[in-house]
Length: 205
Ligand code: ZN
Image 1 (cartoon, rainbow, N blue to C red):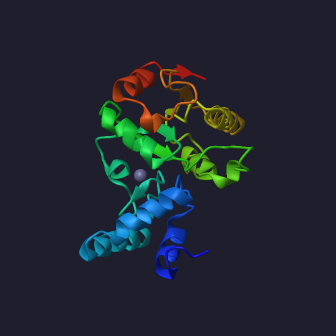
Image 2: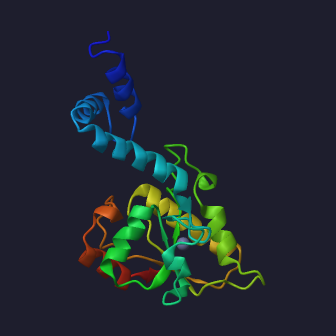
């Protein structure tokens, strides 16, 4: 039954199904939105369209950026021989907040999860391997730091990356961030000191 009228129901339906947004949250958001000043709603709608239209993936590391290359990949101050592999742009942001990492990144946009039906082809793994193999067949970096989450999916992905690098015969040091990140814990929700410790204490795989 349509309790709220078709306009609000349509808004609830559009919000419902966003990550973490169920029916109840969608209703709450919808009622909040219809009570907002019209200009504020317009600004929100504009921001949604603008982000969706203009945000790109960096062609080198696949993080989100306005340009073809993100500021980190463009920077000459960063060590391009050290690549940290993370699951999401939010994890990249978490490591940037520590201010203690000066290498570059590779964003996978997910992790391998047989349970959710996410295989190696669903994340940016192929792109990582292409990037690691320089044009002359020589490794394009000295170290790959695997900073996927300490979850089953994150560990599976880490092992898979190690296997791929070894199968390709690339002479690259592969390290895994230390288990300072709580088991099953998300990198994006881990504090800076713990992340820094996990980075410093990384071990060779
Ligand atoms: Zn980049």
